[in-house]
Length: 183
Image (cartoon, rainbow, N blue to C red; front, side):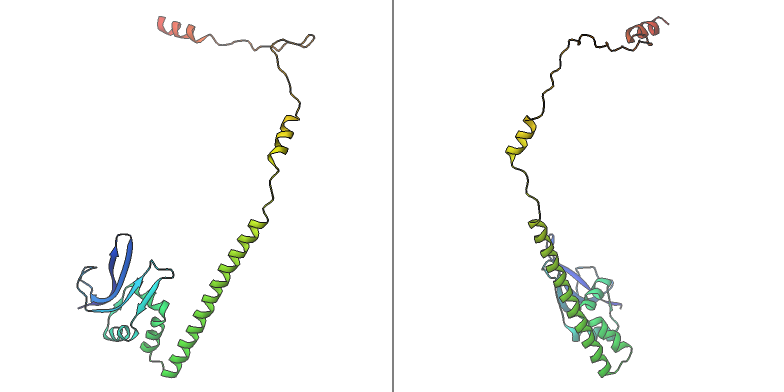
């Protein structure tokens, strides 16, 4: 029997909630499972991930294979790193040091994300303050009314040359139709 660690979908329509379960790979997605080892709520901000590390490690030792999504969740929690160290038979002290390094790196990444978000917010506030003020509506009305008014008339000005009209080289459309009808 091939055992997989995968997600079991729960929740309402468009509001997913997943259980992280161990089940036979031939079982349907929402079918019967062997063991529940945690849950994952992607809707919560930040996403809520709860995993029982001891159960996961015991199932991995027995040969269970995590799905790609569950493996990504295990990486976010640091369990994948610990399993990698156990599988490669790294000593207890080295494993603890590596896990501490991972925890510190995660804290640093999280603090940088917080700094970037605060910098973006400050930049947006500065952009809002630097927007130039528009001219009052009264000034626009004055500038439009001060433009000289040009009158146009149908009469030609005395002494001005008349515009030449181009000669028609084509026959009118009605004559074309008559010619085609006669042919």
